[in-house]
Image 1 (tube, rainbow, N blue to C red):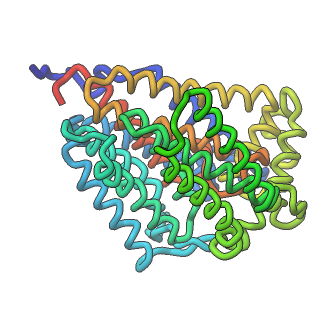
Image 2 (image 1 turned 45 degrees about the horizontal axis):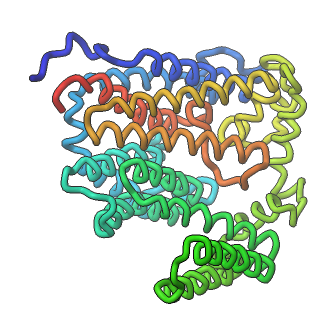
Length: 425
């Protein structure tokens, strides 16, 4: 039987709230440092990026109250409608969108711009969670798997066509939700193996990787046949098919890389793989960010004392490369603290997700945990040169109202669902 909550803050997890506040405040401080100048130093100067970010943070608190005020049942009941609206906003960009940095990803609203891909994330997680919460839904069924894949890939396709492949890539993280809810593990294995084979083929060439892969597969098959005493005749067709599919995949890498990838993407992969050392061209951003982080040393140069940050040596240091500002000014201690807090933040979401009483709430919790983890892993890896530059923001740190609001909505819908876990949904 449902009881009434005393107020909108009843039952909310304050540990998660405190972690959120820490990240938002630290994020704003970093944006202030990244855009600080002696000509503009007032905290509430709304002509500056840190001033605008402060305004978006204040508005985020109003947004939080609104999210917590809405009954938790609303998010499940209207998840499909929210998802449909988000798809329409993505499609509308091709007619009404504004092109910025080569991608038509924004609506120009006059006083500000809105990036609908940031809001499509929570809408997609809601729709996926609704699908998974159906009592008749079984992820071992191929038809049900296809339904889930369609929900994930539709917004990703529209975002890729903008083109903004970096923002589209984050939707791959939602496969971990499907795995938690019963998707066969071989999908994860196939996906991870494909990525590894693709990168290895680019790095070492078709012949070496094909031969090495075939040798490893053959050894594995021999082990299965001889040590587990399995008859070859029952699996000959599957084995031949496996060799054929892998061979075709490796053979297609060169074509995909040279004909489907844009030149800027090829340049970034070439730098990552060591084929290109253009530190003054395509590799400039990553090289400068690594130098800035290294210059911070163990304890950093001090807040507002980063000469590389203040000298604008690192482009996009308020957005995609903001982690370099943390590294320069706070050093190893500051970056380690950030990684630890982000990790605790994600682990806390997973912990809360596991104690949910409904599949919808649990799946939603795992969905946002996967998205947050993917964002901070890829962004930090990109800034320190482990991954190619693909334009994924650091949650609560990268400058921008759409990103801040999108991540805030993602989180606080779950906080509302968790606060209502003891009530009938």
